[in-house]
Image (cartoon, rainbow, N blue to C red):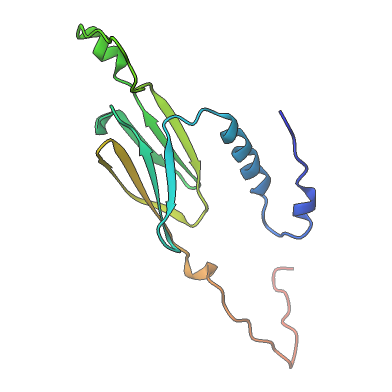
Amino acid sequence: MRTYDFSPLMRSTVGFDRIEQLFRGLERASAENSYPPYNIIRKDADNYRITMAVAGFEENQIEIVATQNSLKVTGKSSEEKDETEGQQYLHRGLASRSFVQNFELAETIKVVGAAMENGLLHIDLVREIPEELKPRTIEINKDKLIENKAA
């Protein structure tokens, strides 16, 4: 496995402690299996959609779990059920194996909903920036310096 030195990036950043962890996760994700295929769509500046091809799966076979900075989509296969019902496949071109797909989310991205349509799973995301994180103008005080009360 290749390793990368991120120290040149860290010289000019403040508070990006998770960035190396994020890059490691991206490196790991590119090496892992990408089943089922998916698209990530940017609808506008604050709205996104992940569309996954989940043909052969029903809603009750898919679990979507959103945590603070990640999204985990798990599909439980029904292959075992098909075989117990006496079905015999002469050709199986549609993969219906179980899967786990993980996505790293920015701190301001929230999952707002999911729907299935024509074998596609759509997961909608929105960027919600709290007021305290929005840019604000800082007034320059010419008279005196403000003392640091935390010290």
